[in-house]
Image (cartoon, rainbow, N blue to C red; front, top):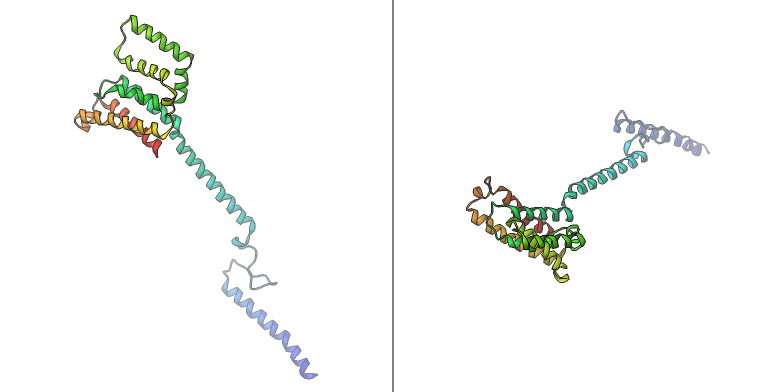
Length: 226
């Protein structure tokens, strides 16, 4: 009985010794800013950042907001490169080349290029009532009065869009139509820069506008194929 009581008395003392030893280890291993709780001296308190679920949720919310901002920035940066904007760039460049004098290209190739890459709003307007009346009045003027040479190609482009069959206009917006447009633009660019003699002559005061328009009509089909 005495032996059992002695061993029973020694167990609490061993537990106290182990508890004090673990408490010392805790105070030595952790930084001064991290305090151990008396209930569990081996675990730090809930003041640690990585154990706080509220901070974890805040971090996740911050990451989601950053992703949304990055996606918004990507959309904002890509907004100027929409299909409609590129078609308007090609149409304006084609009109500039039709009226420009600082180039020696065969401008008749610009008519099918315009028909293939013009925006849908312009094509629908030309095929509508207003476009037909415009072509009719222009034809009347062309028959009885002298017609300026700069307006000859726009008038032909107007008539081509009106009388073009469905099979031809169906190439618009397809890869085949874009490839044909790229071939026309590449041929016109070759003519322009080869007949200019050098890049310096192609970008002089007379030809700089035509050169920029040539670059635009080449770049638009390339962007459509990417």
